[in-house]
Image (tube, one colour):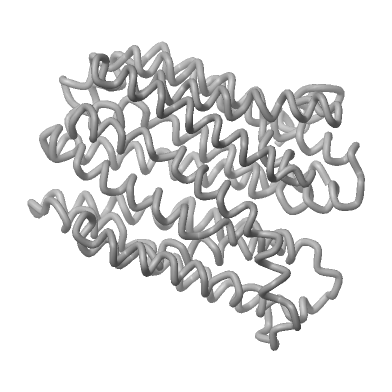
Length: 415
């Protein structure tokens, strides 16, 4: 099982690496083509769109993974009903958000439902154990198309809404292809009685946590823009661009391990769950720590790729690197905690993390700009990871490192 997760996890990491590189190139293109204020406005708008889409998906994708992974029938009879039950509320919420945010986001707001549909459908394919659609579409197609379209728009002199629309358009083919891929795996069948009730009884408690998680991932850029101005938002976005590598690496391994982890915890196989947890943590550390150390060492030179004014943000990169090393050493703690059924504890942890971030941001950003923002983000990340780490150790004796770690490193070396 660990070897299978390893192959799928490495596939997810490959997609994450390509996606992170594409996003890095995108930031270089925008910061080089536009003044800091315009670049900051673009980054703020896209961060707001991603944050709202993350809220609107209501964590329905993870709910689908839960029910599809636990399905007992070979033909997955009735599972198409779960997908319909997941999509309708999400699209309704995203559509309402699009109407409210149109004055702020312009035409990009109309793409919010598309972004949500693509995410939920790709999650459903992972419930079947398929990582390829997520890697190809979310990890490669969307970020590469964003680089090409935004780069082309920049060359054409586009700005404002035109630029953000070029960034959002790639979600359209991703949603269509995700639907086609899911249709091949899942025949259309009538909904089973109680489908909606079952799905949302399980998913609703996690919807709030998913919304808070979406806010936590993007709130820092929005707060910097509000308190420090769009120019500081551009500097902060450029200096912290590499944090997406850690987020995507963790996401790639989580997507591969989530369905087997849910099954292991549901069947009471704590040993197998512990093996999955330690294996993914070992891979995260092995594959991301060299990146953080290299970024910390080369930050003064790398940041000048965005423009001469960005080289002074090297202290931001140092805080980022150290924080991400601690976070990856904790592994996918929140996923393990929720797989064990402790959704209330997970929600409380997220609330504590976002509260810490907001308080530190309000205290530090007005005086220290981007450096204050990364300090606030760092405090939230540490709370978000260390609290569930302590809870898992106290309740289950689970640790991110242990007797499965060396075996995982040997398998990684062979791969």
